[in-house]
Image 1 (cartoon, rainbow, N blue to C red):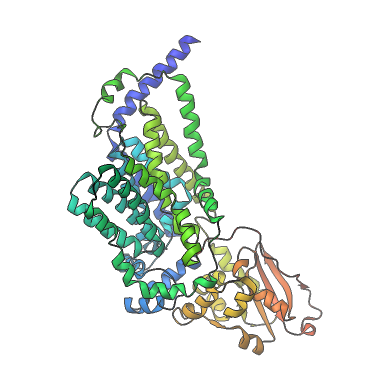
Image 2: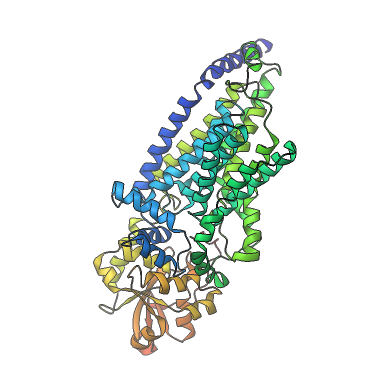
Length: 562
């Protein structure tokens, strides 16, 4: 038994020696991970149909000029700064208008964040912990924003650049360039999404810690940290327009948003993190505490080599912790001022967890390169495995809109009674998707009935409804009409939509029932229903359809907002 244990230990020590040699090729390893990232993300982005929020990006970006983009944003129906649309327009100009090009800025932003995490951690540790930091976001829920045509991937990229720029400026590395990059990256983050202002918070905490420890104010860094004041002032008219929607925003902040954020962030990462912990315990039980002979010499090498350094500045730890608490700060401010919060508004928090994952790997496995390599292998392996599953059997994460959901209503309408009755789409998400992807026959018949007062009455919010009237009708040229005139003119019409998952934006059927209209179920598949709405009961007499009971909102958690 002892002889067997000795053999296992020798094998692990051999693996340590070879892992130490591999760790010296950190840049090459990161290039390999980057290749995997671009290959997987490119396929996912190219095949993914645009869902409701991405269609907002599409239609605003395709407005004839940035002047019109600004005018459309002044409607308040879309609360994203114009730089995001400018970046998407550049991508369209370079690569054409397609599913890949509309998501290319976000793909690039996510990769830039990973590269910055690698650089940030590698300056204090070695290549494997740096790779753990760079790959950690890939196994969290944040990865889906790498191929989402919304601003969050850009925010992550600018946040990563700001993090590395702050570190470089503090270290005195190309200081003027680093300060300039810090100011530009923070301004770029705020110009991509207004909630990106919270990226300043962890950097200010870290700089305050550094100021306290040095007993000296670094005026240049503080000046760079307040640089976003300029784009903030520029965007004030747009922010005021968006703030007009905040009083009845469809996703008001709740204290439960804080634990929900962390739960959603970490749930996809449970398996690789658990695997790293279990393998670490097994390794510790089999290997002696003292370092292997081949590693001892490297342990005295300077931090710039492949061996981890034990001296990580407190300011950098504080910065990481500051990123981690961004969701808490965001919810507090939303409660006090903005009146709106969704998980994705706080996604830069993943940078803090990634940095601590890298530093933690370096400390926990300081003397054992094989375990540092194992941590990277678990993260990269789980990323590859989980995305392979998405290729084989897509979920709503990578394919929120399927071709089946687009084709189904066309088949149902062919079999529906009433000839060419208009089709009222009950929820805004289904309406935008069918307007964009539906067949010409569907697009000619569908209509969305809007009424901000009725939405507020039934749902307690009307920001989506106001956006339909202020943005989608005049700027996207979609068939949005007022509820009252339509119902008065049409004694009978069809109603189609996602009645359960999208219950949070469906006030129409409760209002129709409240007015005594007869709703008959014609077809159903999952959450999608096709109903026949009739003003007078006698009109549907003898129909084989049955009268449905009042539709109850789904108890499932609501999808995140734009």
